Length: 154
Image (tube, rainbow, N blue to C red; front, side, top):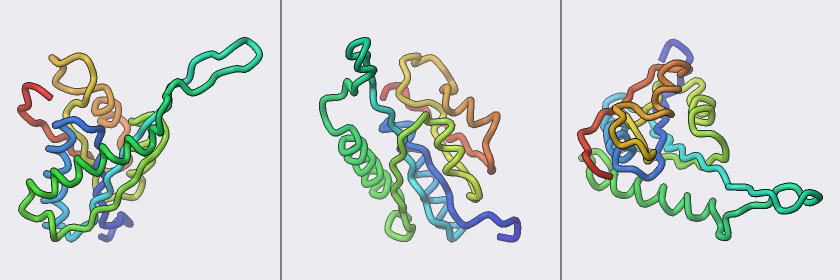
């Protein structure tokens, strides 16, 4: 690619069916472009105040990174099975601690494309565009595709 972009399509997933649809779309696009798909999943531990002198401690009583990695693997495997090009595209897996919109945009620096679903796992089911998709739409460092799926439930 002459513009300095590498042949990498970054896809943000968080476990929803919308993210799975975005990943399927990205796998098929990567096949046509000869690109690699980098699946990025962001997570943030929950911290609560312990005591005035102790500061904050993690609330999560399990290994959050392991659980997020497991969820990411399940979504990737499901998308690969659903795509007719699943066995022809290289998939890179990335887990990053941080806020989703900021982390995805940082991961997409220099990429050919950033792909997300139109909404995620947020609580407002009637929204046509989720908060992360909307933030990325205003500040993406590369071409952005928001895959709109007709999922009624997640």
